[in-house]
Length: 490
Image 1 (cartoon, rainbow, N blue to C red):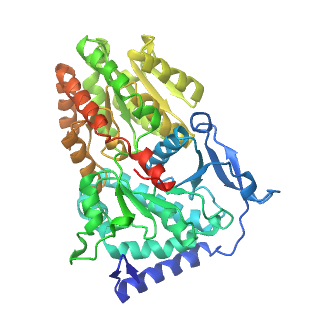
Image 2 (tube, rainbow, N blue to C red):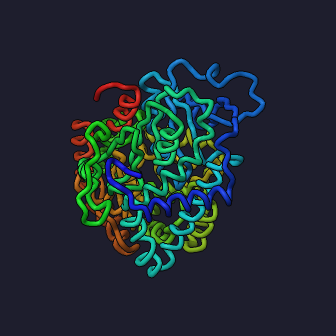
Image 3 (cartoon, helix red, strand yellow):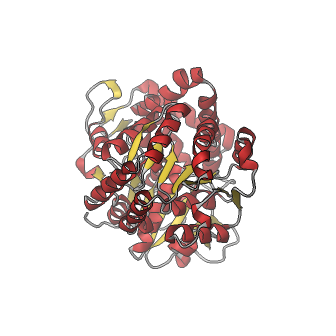
């Protein structure tokens, strides 16, 4: 077995084959099953993006080809945390803006398939590891950080994933092989290649090159120049060994993967931020709970720091708990003031209300969205992810770990990472000037909050840097990825 002309040792190949056999024994092998497919609307994403979701429908009376729209593009993804869904939404938004119909293909949404059973098992392990890494410094230092930083970087790891991806091809059987596909996680990209899809883009996340993200046979898109060089040379993917590089035809720098509605409003949104900073209006902080539901202690400390400013109407807090309602209960137990219903307003599982709130917050047409604390939580995963994108345009600072949100054109305050690979997202953002350095402790994060509140010039500088990056097309990655999937030049 070779990966980009680099030989995988017999030992590692045997290990990869053994891993595949274990999954077959545990979950079965459905590569010969004929899954009939159909398209359905998505309650959250069809309205803004014209998006259709690919579902298994064994009662479908017509061939899948007959229901495919005229200008389709498949967005292949998995639910593993929130980041891959967020990239998918950016791609869908860009595709819709360019006149194409995005077809949502989540390989983790077909519970009857071997594919979903494998991914769900892996996702459960990853989520457990993420949460445990925040509770145990020893586990984080000796297991989680090394795994996410060096373990996933090894070429041998990709060999195992490639064998496992062979078991994820069944849902592609009835999909026309010439439909363009963008994989926002490597497994959909790998599975698409194994299934014979011919126009596959592998949209690589993060800013730390890892063999985990390789899908040979696809076109790899990269968000940063640093990451481009790492993938181009495959440096460090097999210790100190100098490897055959990835061919230039297989890799393209695109810029950050950002939604159309966010990119086209960068100038207007930054103008409003500068107005709030310059004229003493409440500064809005958007706190986002990640897909693993971790890091509650950071958010509690930041909220405590902001409470005096909120009471003085100098600050406003938006909290997106994602799909973790228990996080809000935990925060209320840690901060008694959050039980004050006159101060805290909950927006739970009411998508129309949340969209209306975000629209008013963006336009600045009411005081309600500029004062107090507003908490969002949605059982629906699409709402849980996308409400952050809507509120992002209305906020002054996004408080987040340096995950995929590190690449968005909004001033950012970074709390501690979950996994060593995320470190480089914060470094890239700080170098670009649209985010802070990573705050390693709640105390450091709180000190950063005080700096922001007492020095309005900091927000003005962040906005200036975002506008400069926008002029240099740094945030055009989603448009470029779609163009490449369609065979266009960028």
